[in-house]
Image 1 (cartoon, rainbow, N blue to C red):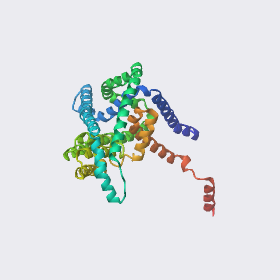
Image 2 (tube, helix red, strand yellow):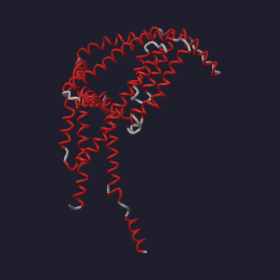
Image 3 (tube, helix red, strand yellow):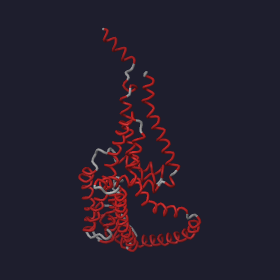
Image 4 (cartoon, rainbow, N blue to C red):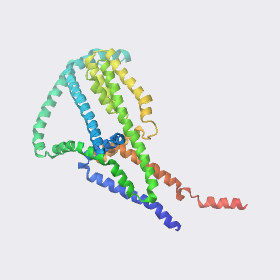
Length: 376
């Protein structure tokens, strides 16, 4: 086999891989409207599949194990929604009812402290602000009702979107079950289709992807649950109403760097201002988030996820925004898995490039200079 044939064989897998990637992206974009339940079921199945495999090792039929794990996973999600959503609705209602108290607290407590501490003179007409906010709320209420009266007929005529969402939610349990049931058969089938000469490379790349995805997704899921409980129980212990719901929201948003803590801190601060009317309660709430951030940054995330994943906060935020822009909600569901896969492929491509003769080849003048030195 001559040199040109060897080069063509070494380039062929990359050409085929690039074409498959382009085709896959085109299919994803074209099928975006129907991909949401499949993407959600696929991500959940990947996270839950090790539990199915573990149950199968105890001689449990895979169909039974898949059904048990599917019911367990969906039950946990439904219970969280039933607990968190009513609490958040109650929090919004309380904020609306106690809006005058917030304005009075800002006028009588916060502004005097701010002026005295920083030696400034900020004045605020609380009565005028209250009238303005009240008029704004009333106008917005009228606008919402007027807009709803105009939008409802359109929604009624174009009810396919609502039907589509309901259908997707109904499909999710079935898709999740069949993903879990056939996961091992699909992976074995794909492996059997790989050319034997490329099998070691395929197994290495897929193994690296599985390591990164498994550590990141399952690790982040565990971090989200732990931090949600830490924030939720901490806020409940300091006596904050709806504290558990706020803490769970902050914990579930931990996978987006800094957004979870910032959102939870903002909601908890507003709730504390409504309830405690003073600095002691507010400081206790801030102490919960300070402790949670310290725990997450130095103990929970390093121990569970570790530093081997390689997905920095910059790439996490960028991947969520980029894939969300390309594929919408489906892209946000698949953003982190796709980012991890891209990272592995980039590392493999970089390593192959550095090992290639094109990268290692020395300039001709350097070779000639070396030959002259050897001849001397």
